[in-house]
Length: 147
Image (cartoon, rainbow, N blue to C red; front, side):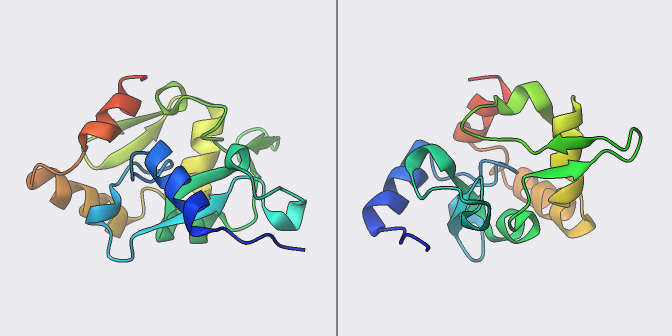
């Protein structure tokens, strides 16, 4: 049984994330479709609708992630969990290099690959935002720097 994401809960999740996608770090104001609330562990996997299990995500990252919580590492064949914005520091697993998001760990690699963070149009989007001084935003910079 799914629990509704109330307007108050959405606001809490968005404010906590400083209105940036907690996966790709693009700010909500720079997204065509705004931000969405993502169940880190999906309701399909019995994840609760609680602040501890919710992340703020862009439509692209949310759609690519779906109900997945892990991906197979192509090099090892091992199952690797995805980045969990409630448990993980973005900067420990990922780094922004120009318009690309590169990984530092197996968790980062699984997340980048499954969410298709370096799809050509995503790279171009970040490069265009960067050219206009919008990427990374101040909130994104804090995460990139480990804050």
